[in-house]
Image (cartoon, rainbow, N blue to C red; front, side, top):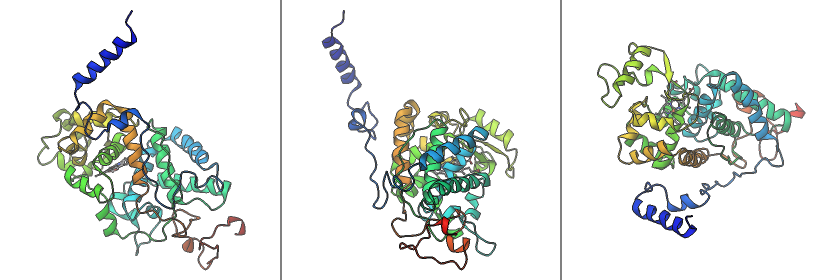
Length: 362
Ligand code: HEM
């Protein structure tokens, strides 16, 4: 029989043999032996914001999304992308949800947002109506979008992280130029992506983890055809390139393909396996495996799904708190696609914090 002491010595020997560099540099020893640290919660948000005013909020959202995804799981990807695009432009204030007009186009009309499917915005409206039926007008559309993104991840197989709540809705949307300037391009290399994410307070590990959001969802040919024509990108796996050329026979093709060819609807670590096989769809994805700052992180995630999920959760919590409106800023919208003064023209009301919070009074 092997005694406990000898098992411990063998374990120690293995650890010593592995050497001090066996953990990737971005994984601290603390990560290995304790609960992962939660990112700080910004002032005005909290983990239990609606505990009194809307205790069933998270249950309502998850229950409805389960039904939606039973019909169409691909909407999960669009809901995740909506939250990301909301947060990167003017902060997570629900401004992406606002409709514009012909003379005053909204964020929705900016090129990168045109591929966000209308059905996903309808799902957010449905969630908002369900929540208002239960709790009145207390939960912001920005918070509903953040929770919908989390549930999209989890119901696709990914982590179930906590979402700090209490965001308020913005009363204006960004211009087309601001929207374009703040959303990353799929043609950018990793250095550019890293600095754009750093400008939002996200570090290299956050950036690689969040890029792992491309483990679900789809893309139009336009986002990657420059890698196929006129010259084939040498970092693209030739067999994969041949398949992409069938989907996108020329530079004008409007066809779509999946982002993660291995498990397109499952939130897992396969996106990182794709990158190692030179099967990342966008330059901004594939270059994470060429860049010396990010290659090691890609390698660590490709073999350790728990680590990916942990870092993704941390990064989503950080992403979800970018430039949030809190307290008496902004408003709680009745209709997620219109600011309240457009939903009720002529009705200016007087809750103390400047919002209208009484559907019953209508
Ligand atoms: C790193 C910089 C990023 C770039 C350049 C980028 C770019 C793109 C592009 C071009 C598409 C395809 C749109 C289409 O043609 O339909 C897309 C889809 C998507 N992106 Fe990103 N993205 C980035 C980061 C992220 C992040 C941080 C997330 C979430 C955490 C995310 C989640 C998604 C999802 C889920 C889809 C699929 C959407 C759908 O199927 O409707 N992306 N992205």
